[in-house]
Image (cartoon, rainbow, N blue to C red; front, side, top):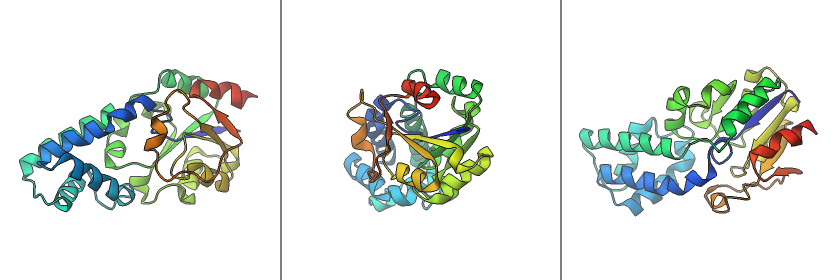
Length: 229
């Protein structure tokens, strides 16, 4: 196995930070002058289309969702909302404890590292500024590609950009979005991160995976031992 492909949210990021996602959306709603509950549900309902680029960038997305909620924000309100949305996106993606050192170790051991993330525009647009970017050799984002997990084109894209065959890849994720089923069909070897220490994080994963990998670890710090064995 020459490469490791990671999921992003709840896998490389700190699962505990997921609890702040609603507060982030509430701040954006306030900037738009939209009731927080209505905006939260509208964002959730738009998720499948937003993450494949159907709503455009952050500003276009917030304008459209606000209008879906019955508001017509002024440009100044959109300015504030975009700022709140971008700030919130930073707060929900801090690195899992120890993960940056882990990525450095894996690369030093000779592994090529990839990423597949179902995400909206905020992550794609800010990716170069994150501490993950210099450690990941090939990153594939649903918003940019125009399709989401478990679409096989995502797995094909990341393996091609890593310069390896899918059969040479581990796929590591916390579940949701049928990501392990997609990795298995692509010929990758899936590993489930159960996040045993973060029982609330699993409730935020959408589209549960019908495929249960044979290999599972409670946290990423167990990954080197597993793949070395």
